[in-house]
Image 1 (tube, helix red, strand yellow):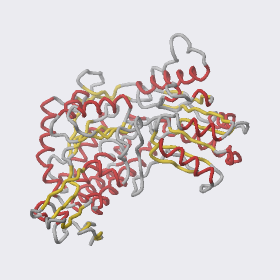
Image 2 (image 1 turned 90 degrees about the horizontal axis):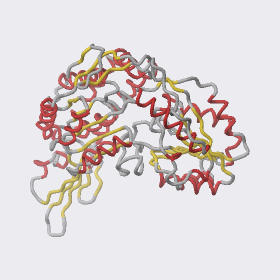
Image 3 (image 1 turned 30 degrees about the vertical axis):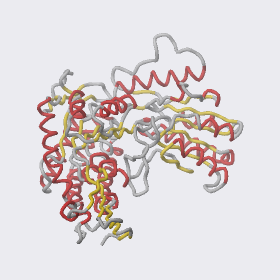
Image 4 (image 1 turned 90 degrees about the vertical axis):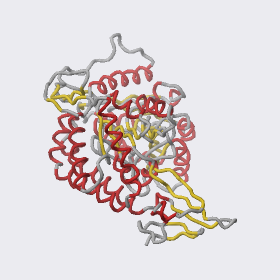
Length: 508
């Protein structure tokens, strides 16, 4: 790929745009078909080698990348700020968080539990062995709202390499110069640590991304972004029968139980802080607050929101979609058609918008209502209910989502447990007396949900379970197992937990 400081938009390049001013600071040229094919070919040529490499060695490769990103933290944060306007403190912190995440995935690889290695003697005296084998080259489409944590070396890329798969990243068009620099640093660090050439590569451009998914060498796709983009990739991948792990997101509900009414002000302040965090550009943003009527929650939330100023969104497309989407929400709630000519646009100088709160009623939260459509940005709904039963019934009609919250006087009371049980079939994670916005890479994390929040409700894109997306179970009856996979060699060279003849054997 080539980076240019020519400030003119081109059809064959991704422009680097300053969200504060709307000006183009440079472009990154799209990958040609031949370039895409070479990157994919390099990944395919090393897939078997990566699969056979000890998890401890893969972990060292990842730690080499982590060290390089931390060394260049200030440079990367400044470059990201010029393309995202997310703030230097946030971006410096996100570099560190992305590095922590990557290190965690290296640890999960060394732990080895995700390999599920098992061998046993069956009835006829044969030996039956089963383990998880890396899929092969993985295509990764990162997100614009987290340029590091979900970007060119975010959760998908780091967990795939930890699982033993080479990765080809399709650079996000909203941050082309940052993605280019990140890819350079990752490739250099992997090479210096001894990782084979082809372990990591990147391509640029919409057509390059399609060619990547269509390549017979690509065995799975990781995606974080819009529902339209995610489902397009799901359809594209289905033509070849490959899994597409698309994390898309919908409206994340928050239910406040009647016994939590005394916490009104703190909940109102927390709700506003959460749905405007990062200008509302989080897939885990709480988008609907269900509160007991007659307590003054709407006024408390409006008061808290009055202290939040205008916010700058990532791109003009996102800003325009926010203005149109928030206008549709207000119109659907009030029953008043939007003004002719549509919503006011952003200024020519940048992508600045005003946060909004839309008040709705329970009966409006019905299947097919436009109020249930996600609007990316700092807008949220608030809905009062007269009794908890009606609120819980309304929850069952919402689109499934990534996460939900319950605020109650007790974390273990009957009301709380009832609310959690109602929400669990609808979401991947329920936070009790906590906001859903933060997602930590940990052993117990689940970041996913039923469709349409994600394309695969059985998967998580964050946490230890993320590695399982990029392996598949295989089995062999008889044969020299040790020669086929170190996971079941007699001396257990990878030092992983295994099940031998039905007995669970912990790691050495």
